[in-house]
Image 1 (tube, rainbow, N blue to C red):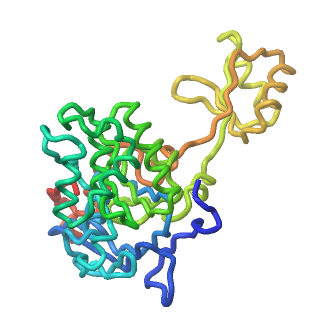
Image 2: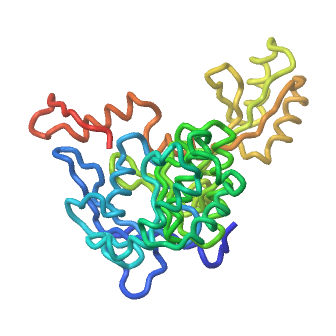
Amino acid sequence: MIDVEANRLVMCVSAHLHTGMSMGVIRTDRLTRRFGDLVAVDDLSVEVPRGGVTGLVGPNGSGKSTLIRMLLGLIRPSSGTADVLGHPISRPEVYASQVGALVEAPAFVPGLSARANLRSLARLRGLPDVRVEDVLMTVGLMGREQEPVKRFSLGMKQRLGIAAAMLPDPQVLVLDEPTNGLDPAGIVEIRGLLQRLGESGRSVIVSSHLLAEIQSVCDHLLVLRFGVLMYAGPMADLLQRAESHIDVQPEFDSDLERLHQVLVDAGWTVTTDSSGQLRVLAPLAAAAQVNRDAGSGGVTLRAIHARQDDLERIFLEMTGTNDDELAASRAAALRPPHDPGATSNEADR
């Protein structure tokens, strides 16, 4: 992974920007974007560290794409400020050559080869052809570069899109849902690519709904909920919030009630999950003692699984557990205070 000493910077969430030199590659100060009554990004103050891979996650409509578009200079904020590589987002032309982006599904000429497509893009931007060869090698398409893009799988097209974003050799790479629609093999391909890019010293910002992939590839994390920042910091710090438990099953189903009582008598806190399985709320290291206590009580276990909550569980606790809960929260946030019964139509942003 990336150099921990150089890149394990804690993201700062404050009401003002730091003065003087900063290692942050992106900084926002009370950044806000409204679409009518909808506040897509709400008073966001955050600093993204330089280098490695930073994940941007949140439920649908939480402002992830809106934030990305503001940082790229594609839309203007309603209020607040931000800078990318030390330059204000009001002047994206200053830093555009140092930022690569894949915001939507990449579009290429189907009948042209990967190399020909990239060469056309490079010449439009005044870049040398050598950059085409460099990015083809980086994304792992060398050997397939002469094939027409229409023969490419979705995963290969995504890699080609990332190659196009990397043509200017950017310091910052912004990828919005780079694994969207990919099969498992394609997801693994893109995961490995993102890890290599982060390890190379680039600052990679990835927006994704696939929390398992975010957990496996990202060093830092930003969590948004309806435009509000819920968390900003190292992935490892967030995962420390995870709770652990030990699921147990007796050899015979008829011993389930007895096992519950044995474990309670031994001092454990025991619950029953939705499938009727017994769950002991205890650290992972306690699994051996739980097994011994069950045996001492005359119950043989058929299975024992020590588990720790993953990023998905922590994320759901922060943002909402289901679509109904999220929709109700969004409606409450949009409802005018003078009219408790009012509703609001909104676009998913």
